[in-house]
Length: 180
Image (cartoon, rainbow, N blue to C red):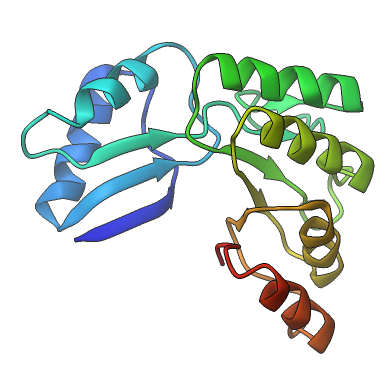
């Protein structure tokens, strides 16, 4: 089976979410992880049911991801601009028993303020206290290095601005459980 580890499903309506999961199962996907665009109760209800629902891929969710304010974009993720807001957002997701925490560390081609190290470090620390892993949407090599040093568990995207260098390779080798 295929594990679809980074999707953004239509999770606001129960019927469409189940339809998405059934379609994935039909094509051999055994589990799908929705990365940071789920709000309300429906994704959590379907997640609970998906392990016993016939002909349906299993569903996991990152709930509402965390990003710096991005006016004009979706407001589903938590918009955080302080360490305290970031920690509170992680705690809110932990209360809902998300499967992973998703963060965006990307300036979207210079359109928005990128999440700085002090905030993503607070997210990672708070998530680890709650026994949750953290996945990051990145673009830049420098962010990959900073996130690895801060204890990141998974990359939702790879480095896309330049080729990986020896330092980032060494950081990844030092943390063999990091998901790429």
